[in-house]
Image 1: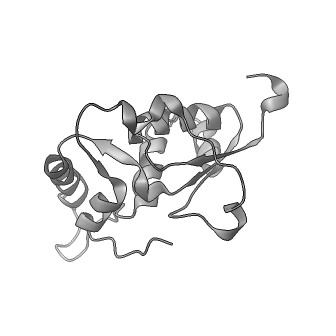
Image 2: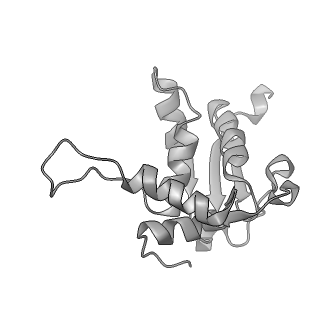
Length: 153
């Protein structure tokens, strides 16, 4: 990327994208110094058999035991926004400030807020879910199965 493209705002429509591929694309853009806004994150898909994917998330997200009292549990991501941000965070460096600063430049929204309705959102062709030859499940369904009570705007 050239120097004049650093720091620009990239708006991505997340509907119909594969979670891991989109997260790696966004992590690269964040590390380049760009600001990234992801709209419609609830429509991002995870490939695999829907029941197995949901069971995997339930086991890994909700099944984590705590060393605290039996009444206290660590906070785990349940909303599509937090699930997506944790995925992007996993692809950023964690041993220096660069990864934390990059994550601060990421904004994720369920639906599309008013200020981004008329803006042009790009699609990432290499992360398109149309390339999948198997079934998939959306982040919205995974989040609802984990106990998310949010409303899609």
